[in-house]
Length: 242
Image (tube, rainbow, N blue to C red; front, side, top):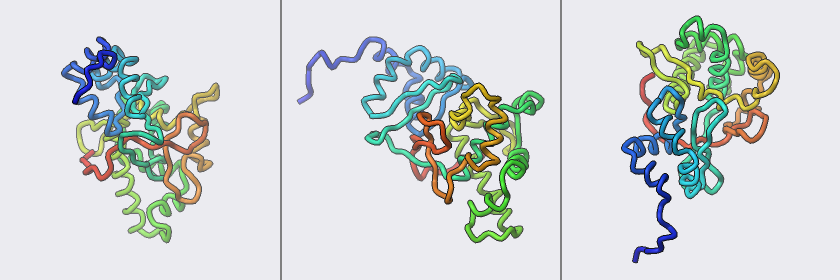
């Protein structure tokens, strides 16, 4: 029998938020790991208006609705979370760090915020050690053309996954994308008085953007280190085109 205890009734503002026709789609996006930035105007406005109410709502699922300093929102799971989680690979974490570096670069203003897969590939190869990159794809990689093609494919796959998470969005042709401020999820370490771009560059070059030993890494905004915590993303989701 259903409880009729009125103490369990929804608060008026929470009921208003859930009744909003935008809420089902927003809720689905958050639960699949998407980061909601100002680019998604209506969803972002809904989160701004009802943040406190929705924060309490998601606590019931053992996840935290986070409002990042840069203004984007996402769900951060706890160990007892009722929502499925997935983990970013070492290469995906590195790509995220490089995207954050590009977001901070003067080129973003010059290019009106638009980059290409070739831009990303060149930047990754410039900032990181190629041998280490190839071994992220294949531990026995010897630097052959086949190894490099596999790396290119993995970079494309990483961008597609980060697109699903709201870090980038497609622009025009399939190889063009715009970087969202949500990439600062990869930069909890750079929220200091030091120049953020220089610090991000040093972390990438020193290998601090990825974990040692080829381990998978997790997001973690609670520690000033490159280890990262689980993403709230449904596993085995079919990849879409960039």
